[in-house]
Length: 316
Figure 1 (cartoon, rainbow, N blue to C red):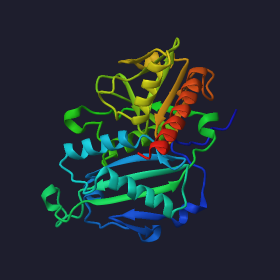
Figure 2: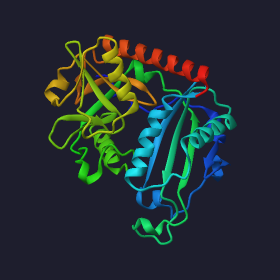
Figure 3: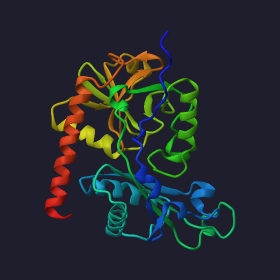
Figure 4: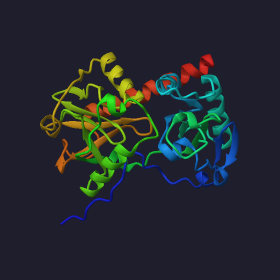
């Protein structure tokens, strides 16, 4: 009997000792990692009241920066959260942080904005009176090879992505307990990550990434009504349309996911990560990426290269 595989996740990165001595952007200043702290009265710590974006640097360029800022600014506007910085100021802050850490590529940023320090430890947003807390953690970060060679094992979990009137999944909010619970349920079932359904029982997303399957040459993903509408997710959909790959945003069930020839996850960190199994059932050959996933990965890599070259040529 083969020993069980060690669990891993879509965000597993190669160890990099340089991350131990990072400079962190904190409210307009660069601070050594060990000194970068926020108040216990901060709204993000106390309530999960904040928004964030994950961005990736390729060859000195923050890929698809405008799309990430569209989502961040829309989310903050929807919850009346003032960032206190323009898009250009955010870009300059990220560039300065990367430069301070000697980064030119394979860098990943978590940019976070909370409602700031509260006057008293209670819920009302009006108690946040001193302005937002803004943090950018930029790490040297390269995905481990096993994400492509082994793929991710998913387990369907009882925790679902809820209806928009409870907490809209389109918010990239600090309030991630729903996804944390799902991840715990998946790990307790012996998988790497969770496959979450929507409130109607259709396949939706994972606890960390958007989910796609390939059936009879067609690429399927959820309608997007109950999941984070990821930037990489949309780039994959656009690439399929532009390159003659049939793609459908639709409701589908576990029955159809179990019978898929391929499945993969999308996210800013890992781009496209193959799924090896769902609920113990192998997907395709059960290891590595299938031909359609490989083609999409190649198209996405080319898209990033063209995007980076355009940004560097125009300086925008």
